[in-house]
Image 1: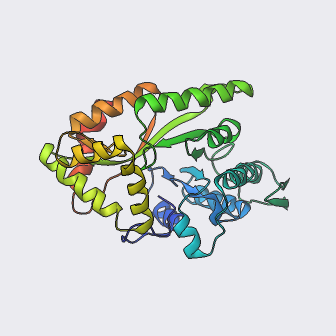
Image 2: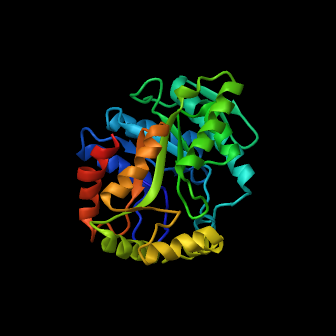
Length: 302
């Protein structure tokens, strides 16, 4: 589940209450947040929420968290939107608190931004020592937080980042260097990848899907700003134009036929990505895209 209150004009269910509901009607699927915005909740309270969902689901939570970025959402709901470096420092403290809550009978922490004193999280999570913590973001400051406190990283394609396999590998190399610097085994950090995906039956279907995806994303002002930022970069502008006429793909999406998508994803898999997460635009009208992903793409990437 994503942790947006709103983004496009589509309805957005609240992340963790929805996860609780899904936990009660499923038995096997893993439940995760991609990614929780640290700014929206007190970290001790969030630890209690996740522990509860892990208990309800009998240990099926994958906990994703990030520093937050959607400024328009912050302002609309009355949250302070400090500079990125402050949001990331708050995230680092929050993850320490959440871990302490999950592994101690009584947890205490005194930081610059958050403090707790003998806080109790009972019941503790079913998963031991705690549910996997995935930290989202690919900047150097965020990767430093992953190296110190994360069980997994999530790097993704977005309008401001054309995350090619080569770029992903460079980010992984930086993560590994930070792990070694603090005496941590780099292999102990799991790797994931997220992106918008347009998968079509053929090239014409892909062209239509790209146009529809850009139209869907651009229905919200904040998303429009990010698309404009992306397209203002010359290589992004060229890739966007070529994708619309069917001669390439936008650098800020995974697009193509099943074979083309699989070939690209295999490059990420070869780097060490073990978990892929995708947003498929207009999915309600194009369920066959999900079928193509499951039946055609996934077997070629394994």
